[in-house]
Image (cartoon, rainbow, N blue to C red; front, side):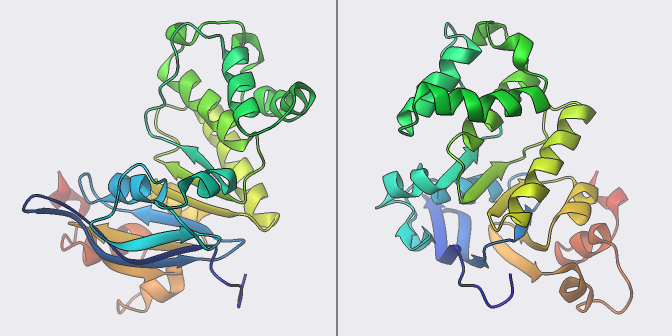
Length: 252
């Protein structure tokens, strides 16, 4: 939404482990109604950035805020406003899917009726109704990812933060996820997701940032990113250009 105040505000965010800089002086702003893709090769700093946004890691320097709340100092308030999908969800093995949804919903202050009325349609869309009585230990990676997505959406968050959200999903679940992401931004919510799938990012995002070796190499709309090059480039071509590798073949 043009002119809207940023809902996600990242200023000078950095994370260092000894002599290794995982994220360096990252600056990003994401407004309501935006679907922002954070792109980068393996080890670029995408997940580290998201873990700092969720208050799981403490920044070495700088800060990230959601709706004005510091993501580390005010992480309880941030979690009330954010739905988070990790790349590898972890659940208590011997809770059933339905019990996990009830547990997460109650953590957000929802009553059983609200949990069922919100969770039921999401379970239908993601083909999880028949799995709700199964123990989580028996879930495939894709089933865990779908259940974690439903948990992230239960409290109707204003911001979704999704780390490699389509990893492990089949094509049907991927399409359902993409539809949900589009619906959220149409409703004025914010979606921030990391991915290495450039074709999906190009179809989905309103803006993108490209991170390499912990540093933001470029950010903007596709048109703005293209303006850095002399021709009508795809997001893939832009990615390899700004990360210092001009062709996909050279990345193998």
